[in-house]
Length: 109
Image (cartoon, rainbow, N blue to C red; front, side, top):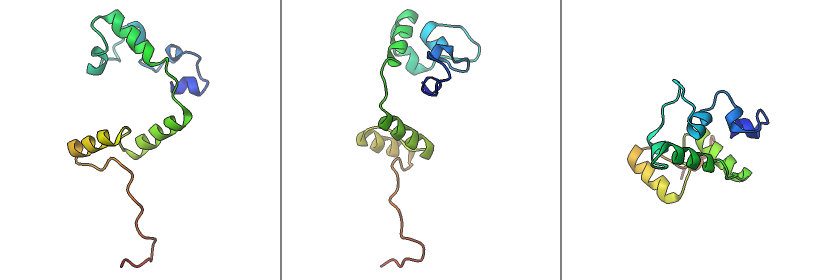
């Protein structure tokens, strides 16, 4: 939805560099391979396409969008605390922002 939010297109299907048309309408392309998660949306191609289009009918609030972008830019997980706990175990990486350390020159006691 970024091209729509940016005012580049009115409909995500109008953005040439998106996989939306392939997933939402079954447009065949050599550049897009359906992901396992896409196949899990429904049993048939038509049902999957309809389910995929439905995903884009939900509007994400600005605050949540900012939280998503912040997590992505920092390479952190976005989700519930339980989800973050699981991702930290699976990946062996921190999935939350770290707490700031002492200021430069500040003594640790």
